[in-house]
Image 1 (cartoon, rainbow, N blue to C red):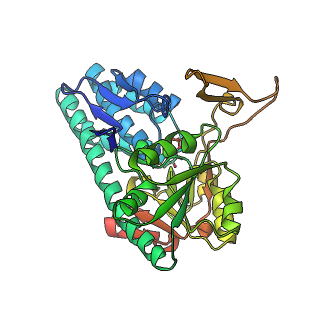
Image 2: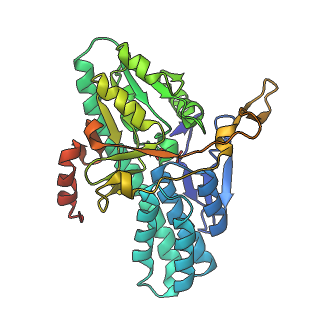
Length: 363
Ligand code: MRU
């Protein structure tokens, strides 16, 4: 993606394979800050604190976390403890486990002396695949949006939740990939951006991304979507996902379920844009089986923003002593999902198994 004319990805290794650069997402949209990550511990910290975030980017970061660990200790036990630390960093996005398992499968059979080079190479391949998957996913989503445009006159209004743009992946994004593709081909498009409390990934990250690309958008409060749908102002909802079950249940940022319910009630199509590593073929009952990350209550109590002076500040919005809980994700049942947009095409939840069969994956 271009920022002020400069090509960026969200993560890239240095030339000597000793460290990894990331865009520090905690600083956005107020500052574009590149962080140099030099150790496994620093990568675990970056994932936990959400300096890097979004399911595909968490996976890519974990892969580079393993590569960093191979610089430190390339023995079997070094590999096992790196995998354990990374696996524990965030529980919901299956891309994390997927990337770690893939790195282990590549590295464990090798003699220790070959692991470092192989790890950096494999992490790079995972990143390249992510870019390609999201680009293809965007092309399939574009056809879907073009078909929606044919059915109506005027601007196509799409609602999205959280940030599933290029910041959440290595490049292109998932939910935003079809939107960028549509905008770039001249489709008259406008995006409703849910602010996405408590961390405001919509207001801070999605709005920033869309603004950089020039895509018309408007930030709304998390509770406004249903009202807009009732008044015919939303043509389609597209969200990303942290994990999709084999039956097409979509686990995504908290609040997604309520958008899906409102979309269903108002006959607005609801899509999840999902590269294949986000599908957990081993899960059938998403509500029972997907671990939902419980984050700190401080994220509910404190909001980060910029003061009129330009200084960044945190303000507390709760009365002293008030309890808060902070489940970070929810599950939208497949019955509310119109389709899953993947790099292989768009599937209804009931057709999703065709994808696993086509890829020879286990169900
Ligand atoms: O807690 P976050 O910011 O990592 O949550 C991100 C989301 O919920 C995204 O929608 C999801 O990871 C898909 S990203 C392409």
